[in-house]
Image 1 (spheres, helix red, strand yellow):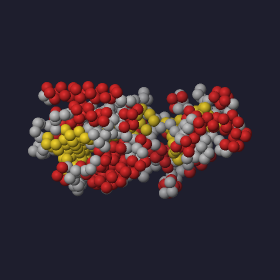
Image 2 (cartoon, one colour):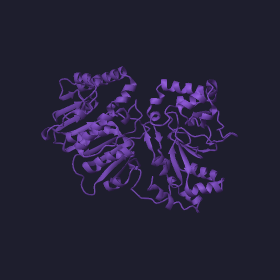
Image 3 (spheres, rainbow, N blue to C red):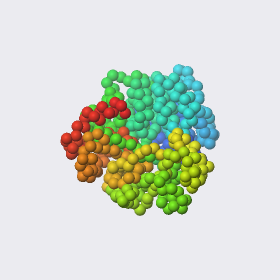
Image 4 (cartoon, rainbow, N blue to C red):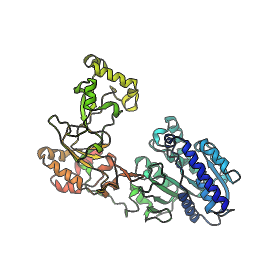
Length: 525
């Protein structure tokens, strides 16, 4: 790097820090604005240089240029004279205008506009190198009308139908298809969650069938790439051309992009069959198993989403202070951090024996009857409406707005989130619940079903044996089915927990015919 380039990069970093500091963190999160670290940007271009033909002139585009971290790395890695064109789009003038000023006099054409609304270039003007760290805007921050526009444009651009739960980066990836020259190389720094979640199916379809997927490098989640965002990241490389027969994808993990800790070549056909790509490169190949899993023995549901915990969940002291009727409340468990043991005992009334006791407001009487019978509760409901509680999404989609979903107490619970750096090595906890308390949505609730439910009714002592089995599940088996975010934060959804192997449970209860009934029930799920 020349002195002038080093000086410009030093200036760029100073401007980046100043701009980030001047912007509210909540707004940056909403708009998904997380700049690529210099070292990682340089590695990405060093990798790109290895993939491109040495004699090929570079026509570069970044659909989300920001302050220009990728362009700076490009200038450092590629020799002078090889770059013939460079274009960057930036929707936010807060970053775009300083970027245009910073790179004035260079080849970079900074366009202060929304890339998703820009017209694709003609074939002669398309780009052979696309590198992008797209905005990580979650789906709930994208307006419905905007989603419809993006869905239609993406389908037109590359033929894929993006799931409504997908983040903005999925649309960026699909829309960019029309900007790439045939045989062009693309490198995307995106959240690795697409590799496992349902909405990622459309992205996988694009990568496997519309282009040639070359390489996916997944960073160790404990080594967060962005200091201000808990996002587990991956770099996805592909070429805009049809995949050859018997193509294999290089899957790497950990270490760095250039020097990964693990790697494996995985056939495209294997990836088509396997819904969880984060198992690679640790896993050798896809293997369909007909062994029992937890879903064969349990109905697994997420805990209650109340629509407003602070309003609907009260302590006994708050209920007494307001003079609210006890009969419209039922016990609910507090957050796992207030449940010190993995076994919850109950008092004579069925309430959990915990230092922090909480109760859930749940009433199905019409408001007119409530005001007549329970004036204090009627006044409390009016407070809720004044605070806008009744107009929240969950509340306005139920009748009456203060009635909770019927979710009975579950004998077994699993925590929904956990970190892998815990002292015992177990990010998730299985809890044996003897109380009548329901659970909020920070828990997964396991209800025995079918033959297991019948066996527990006939032999209550089996309950503790089942709990021992659950606690005996290895962390690896749990982590293989869940998903992971930056900083080592793991999450399990009900279906993911349901896929955890349960052979030992089948061995514990050999008289239970686990195979037929559950599989048949799945057809109606």
